[in-house]
Length: 114
Image 1 (cartoon, rainbow, N blue to C red):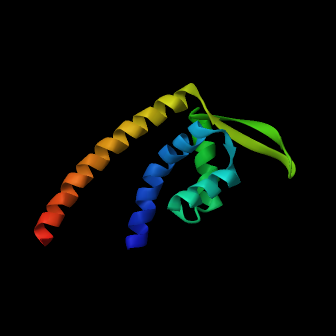
Image 2 (image 1 turned 135 degrees about the vertical axis):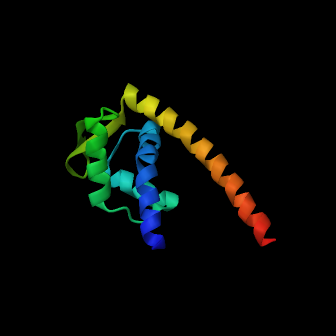
């Protein structure tokens, strides 16, 4: 059950994380997955990332361009749009608020265990 809860929480924040990553620099799907792994997300399945990128593109949070790859065929690079920039800022503000609230609740838990 813990894995299911973690998975549900991840789905809720993954879009915001992608907005932050793509704000750093345009990137393609596989490189995005590698960055997420580097941040400790483990192996996020392609079946999660690519549909999310497609949804974000439909919402006009990101846009894509095909670019030549030094390693083979062209790659689809994603970058933030103005709408995506605004959504990123909103996510960051919401995350800090949520983090503050959860920290307060966790302090209550810590007090009860002392």
